[in-house]
Length: 352
Ligand code: SAM
Ligand code: ASE
Image (tube, rainbow, N blue to C red; front, side, top):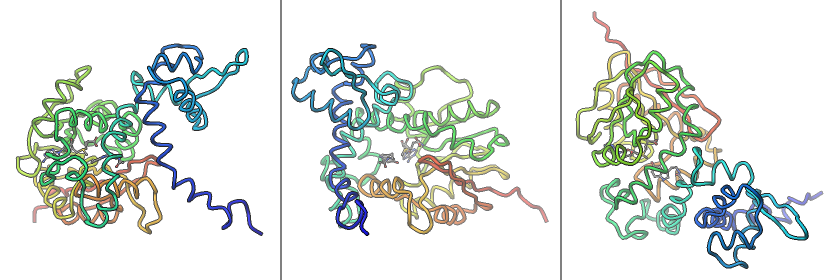
């Protein structure tokens, strides 16, 4: 007996073939501000109202709103034979610019940067390297020179980095008990979104964010909202400069940017700076050992191919990198969300 999902109907393949239509519908609705208009109206609006507010054609807006309804991002209401639209709760929370948990900036980065890189995925797979030259005409010899090819692009990347920690940050800093570690250094900690999650979960800790000078400068200018005296910045290059001494080093989404050799180089520098009895916490989207998933991490690994010099890895692969740098007692824990954690120790020194 063949079910409706049997060989005779390739449901999944059809869905994947046109998956980008879904992404582009989301990108366009956010870019035009559909969800922002509906949030500020505080009542259901007609397609006509919305088309005027976003400055778009009525016909195009009607089709866009219909697609958003099918995607369950909008609710529809019937009133006097007219269709009215309102945001779903998730759309209000995650798709409006002003929401504290907004993914608007991430969606912008997906639309304006990642989508363009993925246009060259076939070349990336053939050549085994990132596609900045083709996508943006920039030399990709220095990865972060290419990623930060303009001030605007750097701010957009930093906003992308920031936003996920409102959603997954608490899980990654609490999946291990980090309370014994009072002095924390967040290596490549960007604008400090994860550092904030640390001080909120562990009130006794202090966090130093170590990042490139221009990132530290932009963080202070664009990102520091309410000053937390427990959080400070340190400027430098983690491949060249001395790292601050700490009990715990966090490397969140750092190792996945780099080759195994570069990772071991960086982890060795971290090991040297680390106090005996201290530790390193690696935060990444872990791949399963048997290659079966999770799909998000598998797709992110392709994204690391088109955008960086690295890859996503399994817990065993991270454990091997940590061990090569001297760390022991390496364990990992899954959070059930996108990002997981791997903890490795630096043993206290034994005499005799
Ligand atoms: N840890 C943050 C997070 O998970 O949201 C940011 C991860 S982002 C992919 C990589 C970070 O490493 C960026 O903030 C970048 O500026 C920083 N970075 C890259 N190369 C660096 C270097 N050589 N020295 C110091 N920081 C660097
Ligand atoms: C990096 C992380 C990301 C470098 C480039 C990046 C992300 C997007 N572009 O370290 C976040 C994860 N999302 C995806 C699609 O990979």
